[in-house]
Image 1: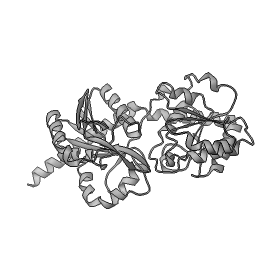
Image 2 (image 1 turned 30 degrees about the vertical axis):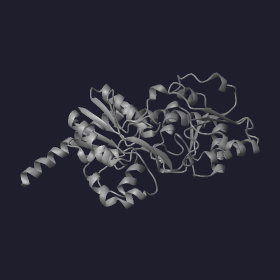
Image 3 (image 1 turned 135 degrees about the vertical axis):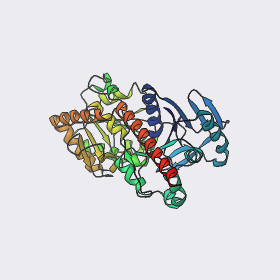
Image 4 (image 1 turned 120 degrees about the vertical axis):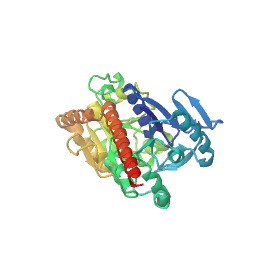
Length: 386
């Protein structure tokens, strides 16, 4: 099939949707499909229409607040129409797969001009969405134009269905389990006997709950004075230096910075346990799944995005969100009970194997085929009723 993967976000900025599209494009191509990515041309780009290798950049991206964080999207609905029509007319895609199809503005314009099979994937989860609530009568038409609808988790499905009832199947984000696991070489500098707790993510994003983790480390020092919190990801450490210094945690907290795709599995392999203290608005805990694939036990919060992939007491321990004390107690338990930690790590590895991108790709193509079949039936019924 000839497939277009459409992103509302500038895929040059790191993020869950950009990673999903990149991995999905790789696996679809490996299956023999021709894949083209359509996304905003890029932040700071003077050109509003960029053509690259299997890529169309349409509309300049601007920074916009979204779901407690920020995203680079294009807000030029009228300027987008002409290049979108040109691309769709020239390419004649079999399937147009729109990621966050109700986000402004590129997916909306592509969907309105599409004559292909339209499939949408919903990635986000939140307690509410002012945009969905305000523009629901307008967005309902876009939702109905999707012949197939996917959500990356049960939480994401419930979220979108609360505004737009209808069939939505759950096909999770994928991982590459072969990149992680017991055969990965840890960094020698972290094999010094100190208990190491790993955090991966954008720690300046308030919804990641990082401040509760730093407080939990302070509480743990009474029992584990040498405990080390290893932070991998983008952010500004200076935001936390005052707290770290005032509590004497300089030796206990290490900011490793951004990790390349080659380095990241080695950080997981270097840790005794992984902690994700997110407070909410997580639709699918990808870093939690990577930790599970690495075979290390997990302490995380009982939020919908985590509850959909991890069972409390099996692959790890779940605690109430926004509680440094609860995080500290769970981490102390796993550091103290190594047999329990080892059993949870093994269970996590087994669970993670079910989420390989190869399997996800097969399920996505199955949804393409089912959407096409349903659309053909609708078209035949429409002709018969005339």
